[in-house]
Length: 544
Image (cartoon, rainbow, N blue to C red; front, side, top):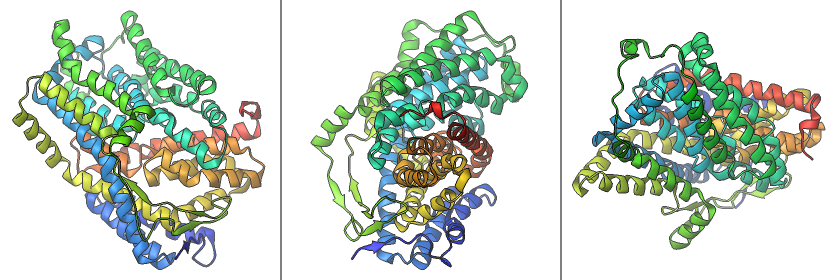
């Protein structure tokens, strides 16, 4: 029997209902940030409260709520947990063989300054991995590399999260934009163009913001040429590719240009003072060990193989081929097509599919596992050593995998119960201020689901329906969902757990959340200001 979502279950008031719907999110974030509860227990607490709100307040059948949680937990383990496990495995191999020390020396040879290193790894290289894979991969890899370079764990985690913002809307070969077009029925190229007329402003800002967050305003000013080059040479290709070629290769091209431009700049310019963390200031002028080209190549080989395989696994043709070999799908009996979303969240009543695809071969984590095996054998590790390293990695992140499963279970319960749509409708009812709150709706969606793609599925239609009622361009509103969503990426629980795992900071997720929360909210609000201006004063920026 079909169950229909209700969006104002409390006193027939969307505002009061939204406050009740927010209880699981408040409990989760509050437990992490203020009560220092371990992440896996905070996630379980949030999940339990989401289940109770769905069943008791929204009237969702208990069996459906439970199956929603199971569906989310499975998705949390594959593909997301699978990515994290194998990304950390590759990193552990490079550490075990001593090759990461060589990687550190070669990067220090280019730039010993921590501010330049965070631009290269946290922003530009992370953007390339985002463009190829998405779904937590760039944070896992960038954070692990930063901590291997000698960054403090909290800084490595927080900076990797802040750096992974501007490229998110075009992540995984443009998946969020492609999905947004399918969900809303709007033109894919037009949506790509609109997002490409919003995010380049922030692509220029984020490198400055990233260095400021780490080294303070004075430290940022000292390396402003590097910040400007990293951001500008990312923003220009981001605009050009998104507006004239489409969403698929935006991040790949922009990241390569940004890395290349930074490398060229550093050949002619270096900061006058080398900035290091307080506890390592006495090493600022230490002599960097030189390595032969052969040694450097061997050390970088795991990361080169990883980059190539991540890119290949991101190609639609490769995914289709691998799924053709093995990718069984399972309908969640008792949930599939039994939950109905209704207007104003959708234009017409729509049944929610609940299908889990066991796409082990095409999952990005499998490409990472193969990269780890190739690297291990190439670096002369035996089968026993590789198995021992892999089991050690699995043991180290076991609680984090549990956390991610519970986080995604929570997100799926709120989605299938309709409580997240209640929160979205509360933001959408802001009238003339809706253009400002439109990106914050996307921000909320990513904070809840951990994915810009999922946020676009969740709120894309709501944005279009609300915009049409208020006389706002549907293209602008839908694109704003994706552009605002990228700023929520740094505070979604999934990303925070990924960063904690990569930096060995399990149990300190609350500290990471506090580190990035205000950065996320302020940047999302700035997107809101831009969209408000585009709607009211700069309508010539909206493609038609």
